[in-house]
Image 1 (cartoon, rainbow, N blue to C red):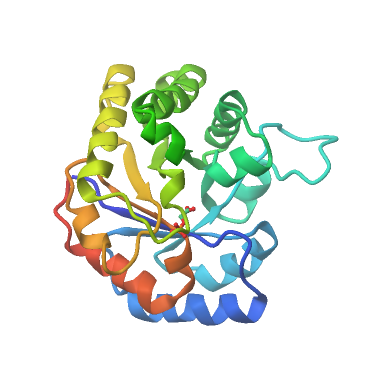
Image 2: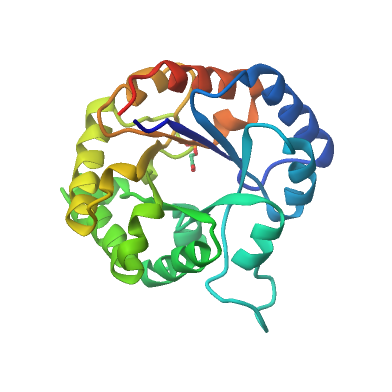
Length: 252
Ligand code: PGA
């Protein structure tokens, strides 16, 4: 039985003061275990978050990682560096990075590999644009994106987390219906099953305007193992309600 995973993606938001009050409110309201909770924060705040989360159940995540080990890569942050700050997860291939930073499927696969090599769990994001959905290409797109990661990571693939984030649902307030999301999650699960005997270990998160009102119905789906939450992760009451919904959701 696997616990649900709720990961907040703060994106490029926060300040020392705002982070502290948000994290303190989360720690006060989170209660005991029941589901895994993480916050993926901008790199400069990792040291602050490491101190704030020490000894708590709140896990730390980064929003990106370099595919390189070390060296002349100005601006990049390596997986080994993340590990030094207690980072357990690193988002890779978020659609905003694919779109604004031109990240390809191959690069995302290399980033996942670099994370895994240092014991950081990559949260591999896949998802289609509205145009791709309307053209009936959703399955083809997400399978291509995940295939690249499966291809370069071999048997380690059971150690990743996948996040299905339809691009048209990110930050738009338009959520995929639970049925739409489940349909894609089932496709991804089947793809993982063909790649590893341990596919059930892989958490497949839904992301895209998940909020306190829609979380329970999404998390009730058979192949939805948690959420990658943007906007609603910046407000403690909303994020806490999503965590509560995950705790109550049927376990896979
Ligand atoms: P959103 O973002 O919840 O604000 O739609 C999700 C994400 O981009 O990870």
